[in-house]
Length: 130
Image (tube, rainbow, N blue to C red; front, top):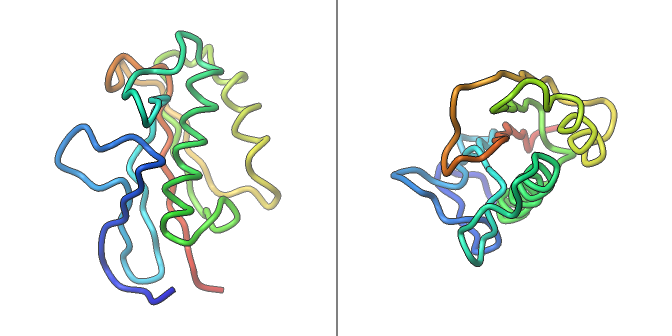
C-alpha cells in the first residue's frame, strides 16, 4: 500500500454520524474514529448490553483497519470510552480476545454519555512501519 495522507472509508463499518472520517492516514500512522456498537447495515445499536456493543465496536474497528490495509497487529495505541466504569472487566475480556501480546498502549476512561446512547466506544492508532 502506498502511504499518503487521506481518509479511509468502508461500507463494512457504520457511516460517520458527523463531519469526520472513519479513519485517516498521516504518513505511516493511521488514526481511526471511535467506533461504537452500531450495525453498519441498520445504523442501530446491536444490543442493550455492553458485551454485544463491545463485540460490534471491535468488528467495526477490524473493518476500518482492513479497509486501510491493516489489522489489530498494527495497533500501537487504543482508547476505550465507557458509559460506566463497572463495565471495565467485561469490555477488557472482549478487547483482550482480539489483540495479541505485546498489547498496545491503552487508556480507558468513563464518560458521561456516548453517541447514540452507546455503552462503549473504542478508537485506535495504528502504525504501518516496522
